[in-house]
Image 1 (cartoon, helix red, strand yellow):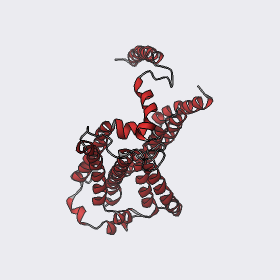
Image 2 (image 1 turned 45 degrees about the vertical axis):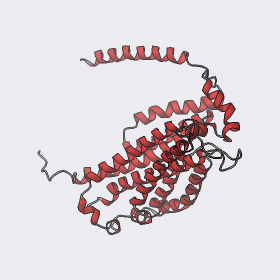
Image 3 (image 1 turned 180 degrees about the vertical axis):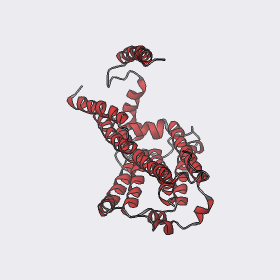
Image 4 (image 1 turned 60 degrees about the horizontal axis):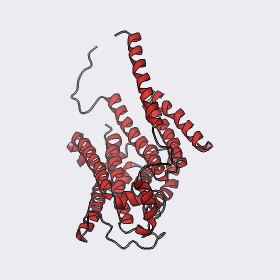
Length: 249
Length: 92
């Protein structure tokens, strides 16, 4: 096929796509005027029924927590899969070598990078914890907070080196956090069944609106997902770091 | 549409093709982070702060970190030859 013919075919296809796209967008409801009844209902009942001030959290960790469990398991399985794949490729004999011995050969990061790393560790850790803990009150939650917590430990790596990060928390701890978080959310769902209602029924006392522990299972779900995502980020990054940093020859 | 929405969406429209048109993967990961920042700003302006936070953390922390680590490994393989592969003389 000549380049000109290709461009012609692409042009026709693009025009068709553009027409469908404009047609589709023109049929959308106006921004902020969602027509379904679900969103409006949630907005009206969430404060009185669940004592939550973040409607998004009420859907993610309460009314539709079942969906979140599925999403969480997707993350869990993909991180486990990546770890398996990376470890499979790694030479067994290399596992025996202490990480520290190899890491000494590597040049350290520049002073500016290390100073910045030290400066941001504490603040990032605090922001991450805040976002996980306040998921039921303000925007954010377990996922976002978990990634920020992971970023805080990555800053430890920038401030020091990979060997010290590994000594600080070997990857068996990351695995434990990762699995415990995933199991935590599932167990929270089972709690609903044990209390005699549906899976992920909010079986706990929902507290007073605006308080840190309000919302029953929502703050606990945030904590579980926060732990899982924290572990997932650390596990993923430590496997990648191991590949990138410690496998130099 | 408010002015803020227009500004945020315009920045997204400018940076999105910039990500695609950046050739070097190393630079691309940084441009992707900038795009993610504007995307997060757009979500925030459109009253979706939860989504904005997710976008911000994933695009500015997770993806660049993993891409940089993967690139570091790829460069080693390119520089030294793949240790997984058996030693092989290059044919002229």
